[in-house]
Image (cartoon, rainbow, N blue to C red):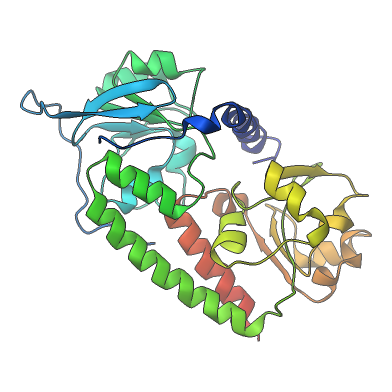
Length: 326
């Protein structure tokens, strides 16, 4: 995310959304009136039908929104993993999210609405009956003129359970959400148990990214494996930085700060660095994690995503690495 191309753009968007979230936390989505695997009852979108008259009212940060009881033409610029887990395939999504390797097969037929947030013209062309967005201000007004629009700010839904439960109610697929989460919990518990047997209880873990000119650290709800490591597996960051990184969710690190953030194990996002590079680096080579080959390096295309399907896959992937040579 914080690379000099796609990373900078997305980081800026995420930071803006995070700031917006701080102003609207008290307005969390309300649905009162309303597996790593894809549901076997996946539905494909059909043209809007005049027969579909049943609606429900959803309370959102933008007020009460009337939406179809069972929307079938959804355009979404966030939360694709949750839709797919519930067996609902949106008709349109931005290119950045369609590149998600964990969802690639399910997204083959989804229309590309643009790079990061999508083109309004393309959204109009798709004639959605529901739009789901992470945007709270910049595009919301324009989107809401096209179709009923639900805005869920980045970070409001903090884990797989919150996401799937919310969207299960939103889409009238509560049973599918319960079934998917039951499988999720079982697989997460199995991965956690395997890791617990081989990793010292007091071991610390860092979620870092090495970009072209900078290094970044991440918390438990900002991608890069944070949800998998800190939430699902229950592992801990270095105590000296834990409070700060969990409150702010990301930090840009100077060379002087980097050692403070380096744990016993490092989960590192990098598109070009190798363990050999790190061992030759005058700073990285001093870290115990590097000296002892306890660094997991993956590319941005795999670590950026943090939807429930991605988090489940990442959790099992990291658990397999941690237990491989124990």
